[in-house]
Length: 68
Image (cartoon, rainbow, N blue to C red; front, side, top):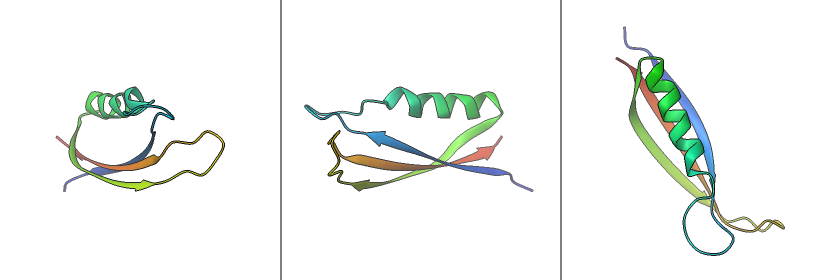
């Protein structure tokens, strides 16, 4: 029987410029699951604009890991 783990990571876009401020957080989540014997099976994203004080868009990444 296959085992899966589903996690979500919110990536915060930089207020000025392009790219994510916390891309290393996504990398850490992937590496943590790999250390537990899981591989990244699927990743999907959804974006939302932020009107808060911090500005910048948010990208919600949903990651599905499969036990190997």
